[in-house]
Amino acid sequence: MEAPYTTPPQRDSWFAPLSIDLLVKVLRTSFFHPFIAWIVPLCFRAQNMFWDAPPMLVSIAWATFISVCWIFGTINARLAFGLPREVDLSEEVIVITGGASGLGLLIAEVYGMRGATVAVLDVKEMESGEARGVTYYKCDVTDKAQVARVAADIEKDLGTPTVLINNAAIVVGKRLLDMSIEEIDKSLTTNLVSHFYTLKTFLPGMTRSELGGTVVTVSSVIGQIGAAQLTDYAAAKAGITALHKSLSAELRETHPQIRTVLVTPGQLSTPLFYGVQTPNTFLAPVVEPVDVAKEIINAIDNGHNAAIGMPLYARWVEWYNVLPLGVQAVFRRLAGVDAGMKTFLGRAGAKHSSKNGVLI
Image (tube, rainbow, N blue to C red; front, top):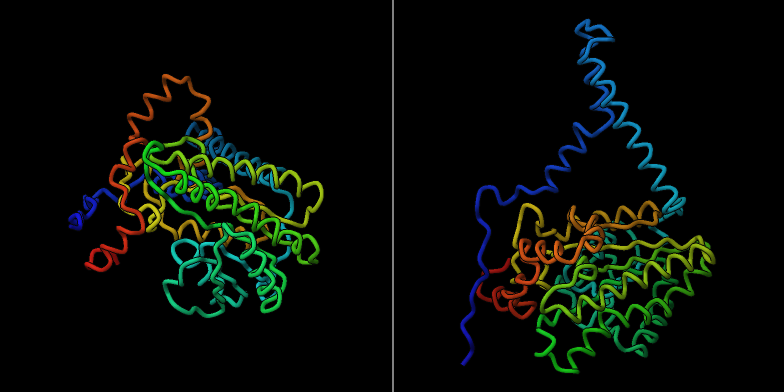
């Protein structure tokens, strides 16, 4: 008999949309923005306040401090990522693995509507059916022979790929002792080894292209902190983060026309992690795919090297590993990191609830 389906608890409190990310975003466009900061002393001066008045001095000091921070931030980004490459969407051929649903599908549809040439590689049919400007290729990225065959088809049909978005992923969601060797192999091959297959297949064409290229690696914050019931997934994501950093160093020396973008999101609101409940919506809000897609598309469009971390804690999580082990253990308990997967349902649960009118 089929087990009864239980809908995950919903967050319906009035303060659910409030998060630290929202507060930081508001502050960055108000008190922490140079333009706004300098308006304050100008308003004081418009009121005929003397330059040496305490409120005037404090506001000028604050505006100067914020301006210096923004200048240093710009210099830091230039030193870290270098100059951008020129991007012409009409000339770009974008390959997206795992692009039949979720984040990959969203990026594919946006670029297809904007006139770029997009190739989606996935073992599943596209959820939205046909999309304008998007060509679907049935491909299991864990099979290097299939990847090579599809790459030849893309070269013949669309041209030489200039953007590769490695987005394909699966989640088993079991404890290590409960997983079979076959499940471990499939998870590591999909989440880690397939990146080597696609890079070895598509990157040589980018290095020969006058347009250069962009490689996007979709990793996860779990690769830096780990979590119960995600041993395979965390190991693979840690691996592709290290792969990305090492590859970026190589390309910086040998092929500076290639840009690299590392994406390390927290929990995404996609079927991949359906059922998982974030323990703290204020400090660790669930990330909407559209927000991540915006950042990825912005980096590709502007030809930037980039490191994208969402939500806020994902950009600072590396400091967690610097803390004493006892402090780390306390933080893990308070954050509920290792309890999140207890309600995991995955894609199967998402499909089930969709049929019953729960998931839209």
